[in-house]
Image (cartoon, rainbow, N blue to C red; front, side, top):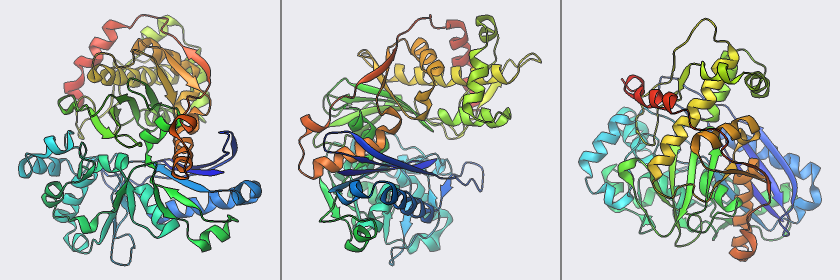
Length: 480
């Protein structure tokens, strides 16, 4: 039995995976995000640990036999977060998250002090990455910065609790802006540019390799017997790819989580920093992938649901589905840059907007505009990925993929088939569990299988070219 843990932005998810790849039990706990100042996005690492203990307590109570049989644990979660720890391994401040935009000035500084960075990382410095956050701490919180003994990524903070080991994996480390991505090792030059050293970094392993053993007292608490290996794990998108069996070049997925991602496995290392495409290590040895990333996908739908006073996203989606084609064509446009944007713009300062509002526009029209605007933003990312992206179709993952209405709209806007697979809503946790199975000696071809497709969405309507052209033309106003 293998336990997969996915530390997302809005929830921590856990699942138990049997050796025959069947799911035995699941649990999750919600998480909240603090925004104490504009552009800031933070979480308290203690809340992650509390959520972890709670989900494991639930699994031990509801599936005790499965918990006793656990042989390995895999970790995944939100990337880029800066968890700064002191010499006693205690957080010095709340974690600065992936969608935090405060360090835009530090990104410009990195470009100046380390002009070699694009060659080393093959990615542009972005406020979401970890390294600029540490430069921000150095400038604005120098007393705390001077006390940093170790910097961990969010999922690796959970590993520290579970194993006592400070270890990360190649895929998650790729998003720090400290990793020599083609060389799969920390870059002393990039570390020096932020006044950091290797001594303050976790050790690195491949995602499918062992990366610590569960502490005996923790294993005993949750009824686990024997020696439990903890895998290196992966960043959330690389783990989702493992969960969906996306390990061969050309295969890809569309993730509708808090953020929106188009992911494709590549034939070797394939940088494209000029288009703001991420080129990162995959979770398996000597493999890489590309990603286009937008910062507010399902988060935009949550926002407009609250804005319109609807009970939940499902209620608003029901109203949107009742709109006629003419009402959709007359809906306002939405710019989905609530927390800035990455691909293809790389702007932390960009902000969202409704364009063309009229008295006739009610909650359904606003909701439709958000679904369409996110789709247009994803289309921008697909075009940035270049020729061949999505040509084989894309699997759908993430909580937003529960909406057939949105899935079909996205297929139309992107012009590629989208496929909803079994277990797509828990792809990250499933991938983490699969990495645990690999760390326990399993074979990639046996474990990283494609799941069954339960529904497909093929393009049925033409791209609304005029609306998309207006959307793209509005970017200067969003970034002003």
